[in-house]
Length: 92
Length: 249
Ligand SMILES: [Zn+2]
Image (cartoon, rainbow over all chains, first blue to last red; front, top):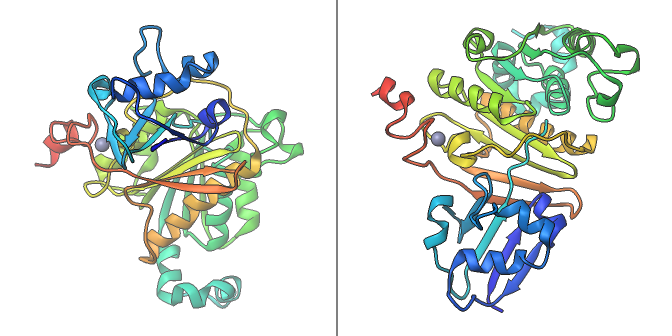
């Protein structure tokens, strides 16, 4: 249980705030988040499109660095990574 | 020079800002895009603090459903233009400042004219389309841009200094889908107060701005987190190949 995944804003209502987890078998960032999201269909659909790619507006961070959504499928995770996943809020 | 009346009005902040800082607020012109949930606390605090000229733009009329959060407007304002009630309220708060309340839709064709000679642009919009437009104007005219947004008990804010920090499109490259959001008025109060604080810090050269930092406020947990952000060299708005960069290099 060495990777920390932090959700923010509306995603907290779907997944909670912080999740400690192990790296997925394939070591991929997208598998890690999909694995968590699968527990909650509504939450899954808030993060992924119907092809299983990250929705374009979802903000992805690894260890304080932005992951471009187009690079997410090729991004790996490892022990001690600090991941953040959140939607921008839009109201005013 | 500050008048005796201004000296009295600002007495409880003059030791924090000094006369020079207060004069800077007085000389400043701040543009606030939106007179809604965020625009209300931003405008109220900036007017009370003595920002010399406030331009506030909105296109809507006051609706009863606005009143849980849009504290510039009160029950008797229902049906009036938001700019009319905003102007009346802000003038009542501080008769020593100039309030320009403009009833207009912010569009690409008029945005630069509406912003005019403002020293700062406050994002109090409810959609990313107009936010991106104001971000472009801020970049093109090198005007600081104070971003804020809210949803429910959640909010976010950052301060964008053109050519120095990440811009709004670096941070939020794609807009979330439009929705009619639930908002607790006090959440807009938290974020709007952050934005107003940033404006005052920027104008008076005090403190450490929310530059390259996105604050994420969670009112449910009563917790603020900070995400470090950075310029994206490929950003369509401020990146090396953007129209903004091409224009300035
Ligand atoms: Zn940018």
